[in-house]
Image (cartoon, rainbow, N blue to C red; front, side):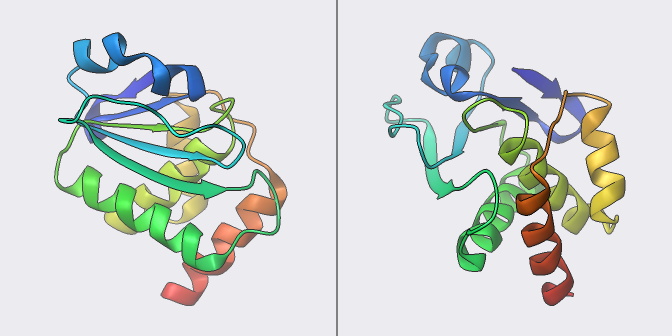
Length: 140
């Protein structure tokens, strides 16, 4: 998992979400799980746990995309050390992180995705990205 210190944010994959020892050792207080195809995580009771299953591509409900971005935005804004994880950590997690940061810092989604890429490898699905951009535009 990769750490973005300025936002108390880790971006990881499904295995990172299951690694309770690493989560606790890093002081992570919340986990946002995004992968539809992954089973729900089993974490200690003191860890805040959010599961908003989305697809890595087209066909997502806009309400789920908006909720994922809003939850992560709130956690980042509140300075809650958070892990956002999906299946492989390359598409959903960085895309949702980019939109959350864009909303918080009044950046464009593209600027925020570039910022994420400076800290974490990405391969964002074009279908998912386009759906997120549509939500972002509608919310402005």
